Length: 181
Image (cartoon, rainbow, N blue to C red; front, side, top):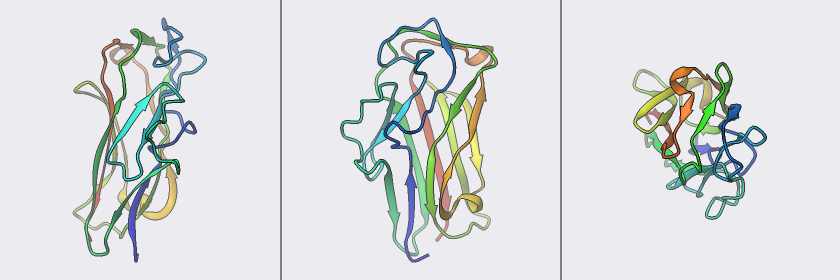
């Protein structure tokens, strides 16, 4: 490809939800999931050097006006991306997810890079609660690198170990992807 790039719909400006889990025992605060509005939104700047997430659908100040961030790699340079997005502010209250419901994560990517041989990192998304890895979603590099839009279909079944979320919980999602030049 003459130009290699990674566009991540991590800056989805209200369109895509992250947490679509049914919640209970929560308040109606803006930075807290509710049964009527269980969505976490991702925001970021144009070059993805800064990204964040929040339950407030209006917290887009400082985000990319196009609705996505993009990282360019010169021809002949390895495509190597490692970034992490943290919850912008803490939760307003503790909350509990319902057992056997799902945390649904939808993120859109547009990756244009060469094919991967042996030395690659597949598109790897990891959800963290503090230092604890909650779940990981992997898509093979060669299935997402064709320059077309790709949206994850990542659903995490809620069980006892991830049911309760404390007010001071730090949530982050990391994105990793690497293919040689």
